[in-house]
Image (tube, rainbow, N blue to C red; front, side):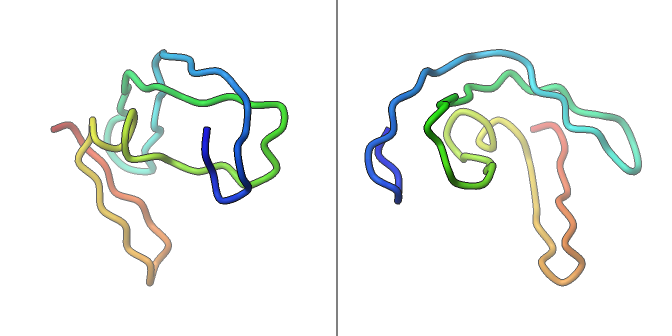
Length: 70
């Protein structure tokens, strides 16, 4: 995968991801994730393969992530 750190080798895996909610119900999303033992950056959520499958909003003032079904 081409990243800001250069090319990183790894594998793609598809499976369920559960987002736990502070309020309301958790949300299960079928997602594609990239796994690499060489990755040195932080964890992140990608748009393609995950976020495009849910409705979401980010509030930077309160550091909250809102989500729901499409």
